[in-house]
Image (cartoon, rainbow, N blue to C red):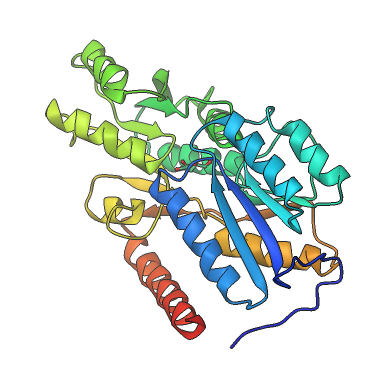
Length: 314
Ligand code: AHR
């Protein structure tokens, strides 16, 4: 089943296809690979859509170059998951000025000169993590925060939302908040050493991959069962946060949908001249031992449908 849209505002290249360019800030994490995959599957549903993914490999300069080359190639629409919030502001404006709509995915920039944003609310993610800890408190809890190390909106807002809940809460004692960029063995490891015999009830990490790293470091010190680890992403699959919850590595993870399929649908609406919201929010939820397997089943079903879509397209 292939849906054909009439895209009112498309230039269509020589192949006659709608060109969607996607600038991914880096493809080196499971979460971002998942995002790319969902976009590819969703784009493949439309026989007249061509999706090109550019990986800036963690370099803002590459990301600027990639977006410039999409502008030169006159793609119909650009989707960007920005590495930094300020460095790509001008190039995004340039695209919009040339009549190429830009959709921001997962991370925002320091400007309003884009067509739409799609992603989960990171303030809410942080607040939900805080609420989860607070609601489990029977007595005062000692906690640690390991933040994302850059200025991206997820790094900033996940921490901000968390602090909105825990700061000034009489049940919470924040022992330390550290920057989790770089080698955690050199930051989280020494932090555990410096706390000696001090009880640590919870450690909230920027994402599940970092939480797993932290857990391994704690395990090497025989501390993994003394601390409850919380991460963010909640990916399905053998290396994902849902499995980590089921394996007892994480106490909980916050679902952070990649938005890969949704953003392709949104891009096609924009190209079809439909009115779209500027801010398109995806929802988040706590994943813990009580709902992990239900969620896993649901996501497996969606994955199976994706495979069937791919098979039909081939
Ligand atoms: O920007 C969102 C974050 O980027 C995801 O939570 C993460 O794991 C990825 O690296």
